[in-house]
Amino acid sequence: MVEITAAAGEPTASSLTCVALSRRRQALIAALIATAGVASITAAVLVRDGDSGPPVDSRVEELIPEPGSEVLVQQAFGLDLTDSPRYVIELYLNGHRLPDNESVQATSVNRSVYQPGRTQTVTKLRAGENCARAVFYPFAEGPTSPRRGEVRWCFRAA
Image (tube, rainbow, N blue to C red; front, side, top):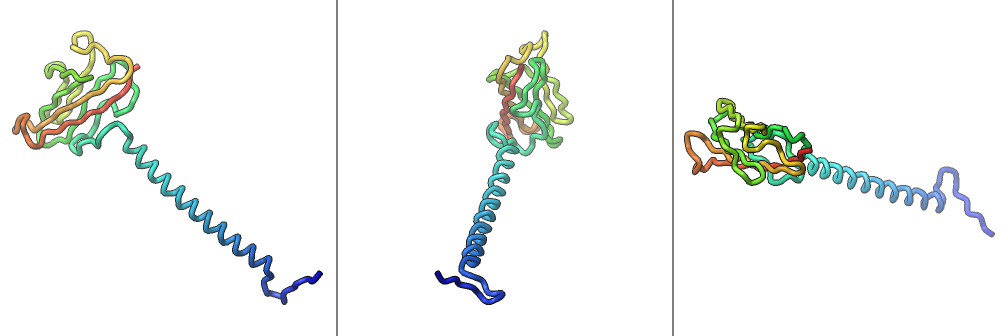
């Protein structure tokens, strides 16, 4: 049997194999880390955007309650729009238009909220999923305005 030895400071065949293997492992680990980073960024974007429908109109400042949230059956619902121009807001719940005189509308701040109650058309939210819709358009332009908007969102009541 012949033993191969290297001069001091020179790599042997077995140490070269270890270095090559180590570099392959490093490249593999780097690729896995990069893939995990991309996957986590993608997941964060998907979680933030949710899957509750199309993107919300930029004029909508707040949906009440938030899409996908769980609320009590007495929960009010509605939306808050940007302050300018002044909008007319029509609210719908589960496909039915709600009377304008039953919504609390603060037209100066473009906020419309419907509070279910004994004297209202909707006395309480139905248990389970409820879907709201708001149609809005600038007051001065009327319902046929090209700036007419609509937003839909759903939430659960218990």
